Length: 354
Image 1 (tube, one colour):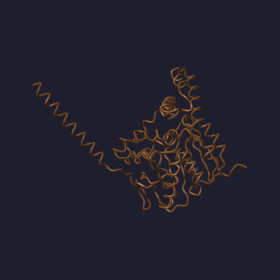
Image 2 (image 1 turned 90 degrees about the vertical axis):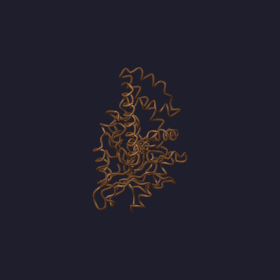
Image 3 (image 1 turned 60 degrees about the vertical axis):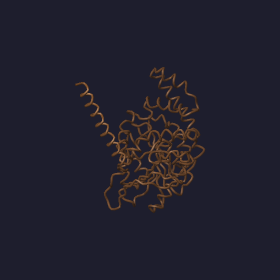
Image 4 (image 1 turned 60 degrees about the horizontal axis):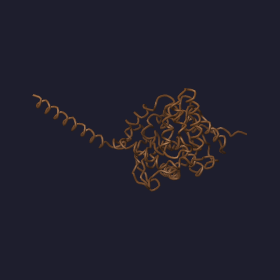
């Protein structure tokens, strides 16, 4: 009797295993796609473009190909915006020809090739190359440029170096001076830990060496930032992650290796990140510059970004604050984010102060 039961259980396990394996194979074979958009002049396409001699994944979506082009530069060097963008692109597609791409070493552009490792210079060059390709492919004069986090730092440098390509730049939660930013963030965390009477966190912060000597120290600090609401003002980003896991623009294989590609890209980029200084690298612009800041951000400290905004020389400079957000206003306040972005880019720029 016992032997019969064991045989039955074994056969049931094998059948279940076979079903799981078949499901995995089927999922792996489902190609990447993006939901269609209605209209004769609409575009909804996920493609591979040659960027800087590398094949990189590009998502193009718009209700009308004649709309102004907007290039969105992802958080980088470890993140892609494509699987998260369903949360904040709906209205943008009605006002812009929206282009996003997976920067080298991330998402669907992850190849494992050491020559494809992200550096600040390479990401700035790739941003310029993508903008030039947009102008050529879609017959655009200039491109609106939007970047988030390190992607914003990249976007600002690209706009400063090649102003003829761009109509305006929007920097969302930009890191403007990495060394000062990290020191200020640690000081703010230490102050908050004191208010909460959190001795364990204070001890962890005291053990951090500044400037960070390695990526592990940066990761340790970011874990404290997340615990104190400096990454997401509310929650821990789980909802955004679930959206990303359902994104049809990524295959099962793309999703399975997303984290490992992100970790590898971050390690390659670390030294470049810590030397970021936009006060020196991008002090002036020939196009309007707009800053979007999350009130609770402890990854890109708003006070330092505001200092940079007051430092830059540009035809127009504006600052918009998101009171319910930390580092990701596009995910925490997606509707307002889109409204403010459309307002900043489609309405006439304010006259510079006299």
